Amino acid sequence: MMESLLAELVAFETVSETSNLALQQWLAEQLAGRGAEVKIVEGATGRANLVAYFGPNKPGGVLFSGHTDVVPPGQGWATDPWVLTKHGDRLYGRGTADMKGFFAALLVGLDQVDLNSLSAPVRVLASYDEEVG
Image (cartoon, rainbow, N blue to C red; front, side):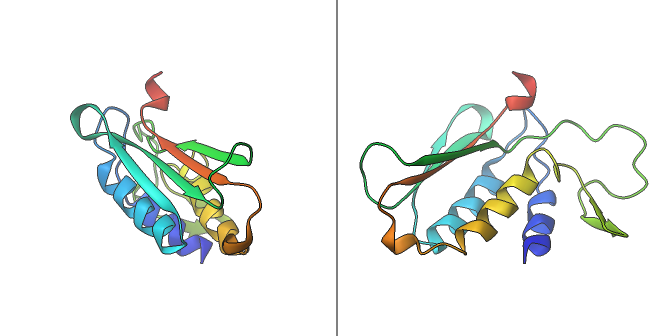
């Protein structure tokens, strides 16, 4: 499951300073499907932040935060950087380590938790333009 989620995430060409809205909409659907209240906050030129909430609306809890943009692929790729490729026990694709892999792991992790019985809130933040400051 995690590999298929990561493949979907890698396919979004979210190079810094370009739109990440399609990825944010996909992530919003994934989180809402797991029971989250989700809000997309659009910013400049088609880029957006996403905030999602699980559990009770009260102080405390935990926040999972990551960014959706990636640096340009540059040269030296032996495979398409926007297609998840497996060689042995390694996965290659733009953003697999920074940070699309985080979002795939988070979604799989959320599936392991009874999100209806949380005593403290779980929040998710997905931001843009981290790679450019």
